[in-house]
Amino acid sequence: MKFVIAILVLVIGSVALADDKRELLYEVLDGSKSIKFKFNETFLDGYKVEGEWTPNGEEAALSGPSIIKFYKDDTQEKFQVFIALSSMNFSHFDGLNLTLDDGETFNASVDLDKTYSLNYSDFYPMSLWRTHADITDNEDFYDNEPPFFFEDLDFDGIDELITVEIRAGQRWSNEYIVHKRRVNNRGIIEYKPFWHTEHNIDDLTKFDKNNRLLTFMGSGGACWNSYDIYKFEKVKYNLIASETERDVIVNPGQEDAFLACENSVFDIVDGNKVLRESIYSYWDDKSHSSKTLKPEVIRDIQRTL
Image 1 (tube, rainbow, N blue to C red):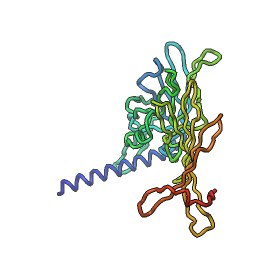
Image 2 (cartoon, rainbow, N blue to C red; image 1 turned 90 degrees about the vertical axis):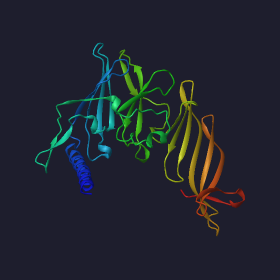
Image 3 (spheres, one colour; image 1 turned 180 degrees about the horizontal axis):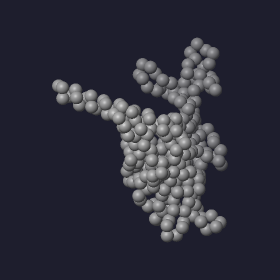
Image 4 (cartoon, rainbow, N blue to C red; image 1 turned 60 degrees about the vertical axis):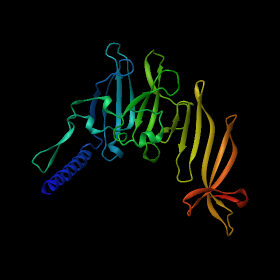
């Protein structure tokens, strides 16, 4: 029994020590110190990658701006991208830690002159061609995202460079910025932010590679969402359908008035949204499920906003 208690005390003590280290590290990395790093792998046919990251303990997930530089030694080709909210798990930075001086007090030992070597293969293998649940339900995903990854989103056989903006999307999800390869007027290869639609990509975006579909969700609450569906056709993504969910009052000002959810489906005709149908539903407390309203029940509709 004493042995079990001793182990429990050791485990609790280790957790507390880790929490203390984390809190102090957050105080030390206050947005004024840049950590230099490089990846041991090469990318995009031989590009090496190095960068500087300036984490801020006051931001979500200890995030902060970073500059990622891609370069080739043999050809002098180079370009760089900027990430406003970058975050990387400190387990990848060998030696970036806090030391225990006398058993009680901590000393911040962040070596800002050192360039930390990172293994890209140690980060979570990112892909946008998966469902939101596939990514966010995986506990290895959060806090282990790489700052960038590559994926062909426009089916031209050339991978786009995608940078990860930590917790910048809806509902504290990540946002993804797509950078398209191009050659500028001086013949220099660049990767510049580029996208086909008016929507930003985040973890709530649904991807269907087989049918070349993207569904963008505008998250507003239980019954205040929107869904725009785009299909890749020829050289770009085109809007092909749209849905909205809105709170409404059924039969307002009458004794049988109640709150319902209006789900409207729109077709896209000559670039304009044309209403196909609206379906009304309500939450049934007895069955703990959503029920569709019969048309004869609805005499009048009033939108809440």
